[in-house]
Image: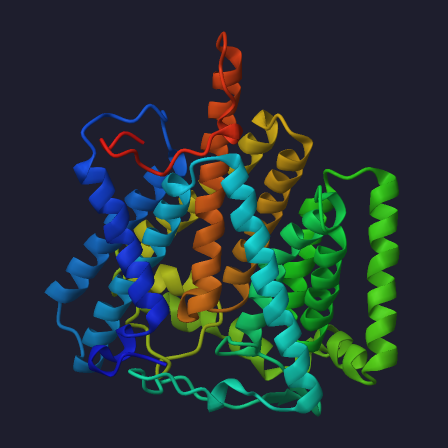
Length: 419
């Protein structure tokens, strides 16, 4: 649903994300002292990529462009600013490791509730969200309806499509696993949410979600002992058996996504995109044709990297890949510098979540769906934040009489503007 006068840019999430960017910019402008955080590579990579995409937008607007591509280009730029705003507020606005854990915990709870809602949709075969009426908002361009595959309804929660729903679940899955196994308190709550998330991933009957989940589990398990990996494998088999027994036919439909790929039209659409993409890229290889201007009337790519190459050119794609690599490196560095074992596990979980999100970019148009893109940029910002906080914790504890940052409760900015 959207604020009608703003059109496609009027989704509440888009307005809040856009406001987050200006909130971050306002604090940067009004503070009167230099921060002592040191280099912030995730922030620098995000701002550098946004600058590149501004150049891409300016190039697109300076060239002859079809009338139906102008509004998508404007909206695309606003979305990029919003995504960057979410990343920057997460990167710079979390004051302590305690607050960082709180946000991750709430993210697990929120996604767990959405997973339970998806299970309700599957059981009742009702979408429910199409009945919601919010004063001041009107129905946007998203089409409402419960999609089916192989005779089974595919829940979408509050997402616009089951693929987006499944990918969002898999991006938070490693964090949910970490809280279910290592949380100091209420592990039984997180284990319940973990079961709901794992079950909902299967019910989404999404090839993209299953691939992303596999990547996330492989990265997460890289830090486990052999015994822990064996227990995880047993748990995975148990969940598969539970799905097979309680929902007949879903496991077969899920395995059929991979055994019948040669007959799947969605796979043919993805593999048939490269020749067409080469034609569009050749017209403007360096800066592309403008973010958001490759409309469905040309082709549905289902590949975020290929779409970025077409719309942002080589410069836009390199900027995006740089951001992903820097975010992953930040998570790895946070794991290396973390003093607490639980923080070290959370850093590895963030790395696995980013790996899932990066895999999702190769399997569907992440930027075309608000929840998947927003969640991914939130996780990138949290990886950068954790790097900052763990390094500051080490530096603080190394000083005589130093106080670990994770024990502070300072606000994001003091009244005099000092971070």
